[in-house]
Amino acid sequence: MHDDQDRKPGFRISRRGALAGAAGLALPAVLSARAHAAGKRVVIGTWGGDYARLLHENIEVPLVIPQGIKVIQDVGDEPPRMAKVIAQRMLPHGSMDIACAEAPYAWRMHNMGLLETLDEKKIPNLAHVDPNMRSDFLVPHIWSPQILIYNPKTVSAPPLTFGDLLAPRFKGKVGFPNGNNLYVMMAASLFASGNVDDLAKAKALLIKLNGNGLRLYPETDTVGTAFKSGELQAGVMWFARVVMWQNAGIPVQASFPKEGSVIYISGFVVPKNAPDKEAAYAYLNAALDPRAQEGFAKHMGYLPTVTNAKLTGKVAQQLALPNPKPKLIPPDYAFDAKITAGFNDWWQQTIQKA
Amino acid sequence: MRPVRKPAASAAFFLGPATMVVLVMMCAPLVLLARFSLDRFDPTKMMIAAFTGANYLRFVTEPYYLDVMRTTVFVAVSATALCLLLGIPIAYRLARTQSRYKSTMVLLVILPLFMGGTVRAVGWMILFAHGGMLDLAVAAIAPGHGLDLMYTPIAVMIGILSFNMPYMVLMLQAVFEKIDPALEEAARGLGAAPGGAFWRIVWPLSLPGMLIATILSFIMSMNAYATPVLLGGPRFHMMAPQVYVEFATNNNWPFAAALAFILTATTLALTLVANRLIPGRYRAP
Image (cartoon, rainbow over all chains, first blue to last red; front, side, top):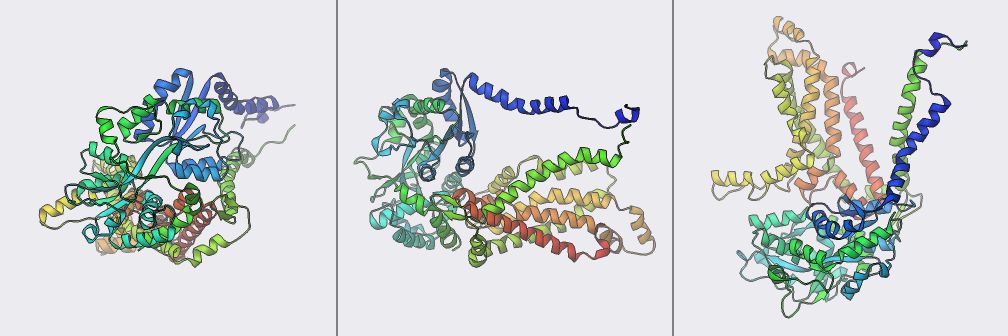
């Protein structure tokens, strides 16, 4: 028997209602799985800004989307992207099919066993990649040599070696982005010992550089602003940034250090639990297409990683390496992966706090 | 016949599931974080399951991290004190004004909140930078001189102050609004000067609300991230950016988790101390 008072207040869930509700909760997952199955979809974790735009304009629109692959960009900084790959390592399917990564980050993820070993047959354009840049877990996308940057309006004698930055004439006028500290350590090591992994000698040199009024900046772009305002006269930077800043009217020039230039490589990795590896491979192959590579060189100043990309006109002139060709030295990534955390601690406590 | 449902039971029926969801969503990550903080870090494997207090010990034994905490507390206390000092007159004036432009004035106070904290920090960067607006203005007034505030503790303090001020003013305004102006008028009628009436009447009555506004500002300052990074630069260290460096740059999740707990515990402890400083009779019931 039911009385009126029993029916009125609140709401009561029937068994049927509860089942329907539970089914409703699961609906988005079902729909999402169906949508995924209906067509290929690639999720790429990338930096935002120009890089994301150029991925869209040079790779996705002309080369990936016409293959019937939907592209979703997961925009963010690199450390959180790596953290996401780490955090999702236990899941059967992660949220990213491809993660953009600088080579040292890629190596660290590789050491943790997070990355897929690439099936080269599915990336035919890998055949055109410079053999010195290849690895079995990173598709190198862009690269640039490390150079000594200076303001030609205020510096009459350009720095020729890393050691020149210690000269009294550069006191308080040398700087670089704090995030490049590991690469600057390599440059110091290269000058001090001819190798990129002499940590002790590099640290001694960095302490001297710090004593000469080294300036550190939170972002790479703030270094460009510092050159524009006259706060900086010299520093350690990527050749690509010099080209970008020259095009933006900032008075900077590049000097290739006599001891050699460490090379910066940025590329793509595929997490082991990527949901759609086939779509990821299609994207990676497109990224190595000469047309896409030429587009990046034109707009970002980074050099192509494939040998069949042909640069012409002003781009070719700006990105041409000096003759004779400078010594280009790849970092010792395995070594860097081991020392990064310890070096960062030392950097904070010795250089930043000094 | 079924028993009549009591209102309390109905309330529990509605509140229970939501409360449980909030509790689980809030507590589960904290429990996980607590577990991480007892693990060991390895540069290649990242995290090795363990049950060690080494990460907490590292914080208290390495002078660098204690120094970072000292800086954080100093900045948070200073910024909060300044916020209170500058916020009280603005909030009091807003609360008592009869002007028809009152809503416009309130809008002006909350206008900075329409922009994200990072965007505002970038605005300060343009103002403070070498060759920035402030530097050029000083150079124009006093040739040969300049004012380069960028990457200094003052820049961080101003940035945090500007970030917290709208919250402080809005909360204090609400506190003052609730105090009947007739009480002040009565005090004035009995011979109290305006300052005296404020000090003897408004100040004690507003203390509980003021404490809440102060605590909110303090917590936000202790956890400031974008402002110290962008305006303080790489040589200025506060706790929240330090947690990020350990977590994201070094991938040292165990130590980052320990730092996060230490920051939370310190904030909580200092908040409780602040609460005890208010005489019992003025505390919120």
